[in-house]
Length: 197
Image: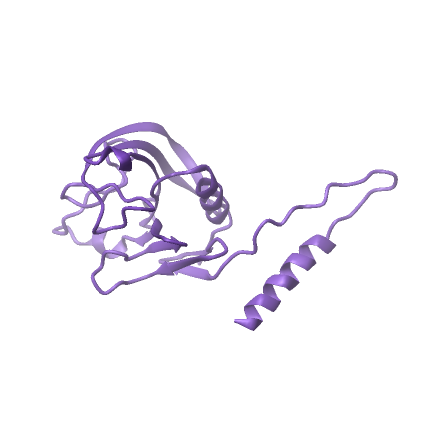
């Protein structure tokens, strides 16, 4: 724990010391808001989690597989390797797609409204899904199919927005539940810095 703290302080101080100026002109000093958290590998993708976040690769009941947690939210996002599931022609799976309602949901049963207050297993049923945005967004050097939906739920207090990135060749799915400005920024930064082996 102490070595992580020392590393974090060294990274912050190192970044602050890297500012330069040109003769007579002050240059803006880059701001470092948070030091990246632990590195996580999902299939061929490697990402640094936001500071304070944790990752559950596999959980005993499978409900939290691939979940990124922060604070009291046990599943703010999911990073999933779908290579095995998509290689089995008999597997019950819907491929991710911004071209269908609930396009982030790969199950064949009824989707649920996962949010910071409704984790997998306790989330109410999703009753509607309206596509707000779609196209392509970066995950490191790759372009992912992207979608953002407004999701309505049986319990209307759980209505939220869901964002999805899908790499069909790499078979990697990233889903952000309960989209909010602070987590949108964290997800975008984490995915922009992703690397692949």
